[in-house]
Amino acid sequence: MSPPPVSHGLQALASGPFGPLYRQAKRELQRVVESGRYGPGATLPNESVIAAALGVSIGTVRKAVDELVHEHVLVRRQGKGTYVALHNDDRFLFQFFHVEPRDEFTEAQERPVREYPQVQCMGFVRGRADEAEAAALRIKPGDPVARIANRLSLAGRPVVHDRLAVAAQTFRGLNEKRFLERPSTIYGLYQSDHGITVLRARERARAAAASPETARILGVPVGLPVLEVHRIALTFGDKPVEYRISTINTAMHDYVSILSKQR
Amino acid sequence: MSPPPVSHGLQALASGPFGPLYRQAKRELQRVVESGRYGPGATLPNESVIAAALGVSIGTVRKAVDELVHEHVLVRRQGKGTYVALHNDDRFLFQFFHVEPRDEFTEAQERPVREYPQVQCMGFVRGRADEAEAAALRIKPGDPVARIANRLSLAGRPVVHDRLAVAAQTFRGLNEKRFLERPSTIYGLYQSDHGITVLRARERARAAAASPETARILGVPVGLPVLEVHRIALTFGDKPVEYRISTINTAMHDYVSILSKQR
DNA sequence: TTCGATTTGTTCGTATGTATT
DNA sequence: TAATACATACGAACAAATCGA
Image (tube, rainbow over all chains, first blue to last red; front, side, top):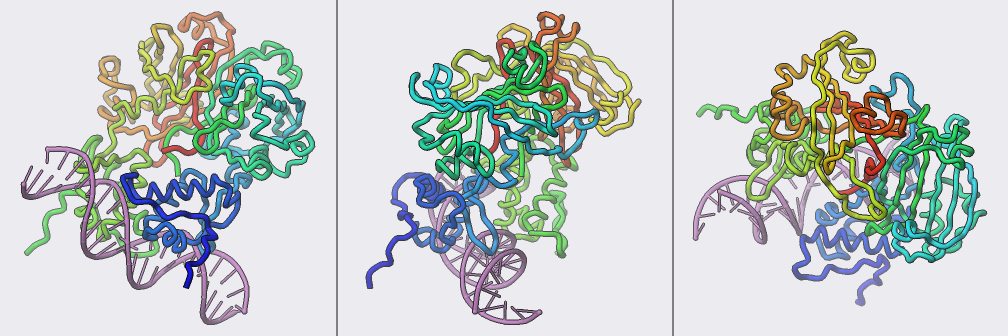
């Protein structure tokens, strides 16, 4: 009898001093996911199959999968299976959108009032990376980039002016039409059309005076204090994939964050 | 033979439909920690003892402890034991302090440049809670509070103007002398002197124009765009224990946050 | 509707490795 | 070196969710 073909793409773990088995298993799982062998939403082999393929016990596989679930790379559903996480469902809609309306009593509230913004594209152009974009995206100055400007509205009022830049090489085939016709969020588009999963982001916020352009787009006076958030979105291996500057009119809204802990 | 005295304070888990055993175990551990039976830094009984006391297997205890470790309630050290987390060591210094210097290239940097601020007390007064403080701290308007103002400096330059309010009833014995002579951070003082562990915080940031008072304290022009962060610090059970408004001069510094995931 | 097959979730027990004192 | 405590790994059994026959 010949061994069954390896349809799962998993490789048995090598022996040696590479740390705990469950971390090796985690790396191997991450490797096959990053390889695209299992795209977003795909079902992984069940745990026994993975365990057999890697040559470890099922408990070791579970521990590896546990960590990847916490990192939002995988999703488990009891009775169904383990999936590569899709980042276009409700659970992730607000992972990177933190603007909420403010009123007298919102501060003391436990639960945020979540409303997803209406996004209006204000420009889609191609260009060459400037110094800041190159540093943020870890590409060379002058490399081709796509720049997209958006206006985000909550309850019909413009609140955020977004300007983002991505490396054209990473987002081959991205064009204004596809961008405008995306069925879900921008990060959902990155995943479904370009196989790029945004896992986390670094953000730096500061106060600024509204520029003439931002003032026009948000309908506020030039010089009004606004919140400027610089974001670098990261995928596997903390590779930067998007550089975004969001200018927020905080007259009636806040930038909300929760520090530490979770679950 | 009579059973040994319960010196650990743990109670056996009741049977019934109270969810998974490891969550019951987690709640029981959390209960004894909150009760003060084990203060900050105290060593918990070893895992076998806990398992026997709760009437579950050691693996179940480990799973419960795992979650409490992730939530920064407990700390494990291989070969030594399991401890109630101390929130005054380096690891927690920056859990709630997110202001960093900015330069041309900081955005693309992986690692933050962490400098702990020099804190200068600008006022310590007692008073009665106003509406906002009462709502934030979940006390009644008019209840006694302590209000403390601080100026935080980085590299010798004033950067943050902090105003915080706490319920006097929760922080009995807090006075200006003890506050000024605290050996570590403010949250370290809350823990060591008042048994209150700040586990997490909700923050809302917005842009504002510098008030005359803030302008004076930070040495900036009145009306300069500054970042205003409203924080409610929470302890066990998401109970609010401190309400703080931080006004940040973001001319040379940013408010930094990392979204989603890690470990 | 019921049943059975599949898959993950929980719990137990045991053995061994590694760090600390 | 020995004792202690947490860390890792394995395997087994049953529970709970899901889905289709």
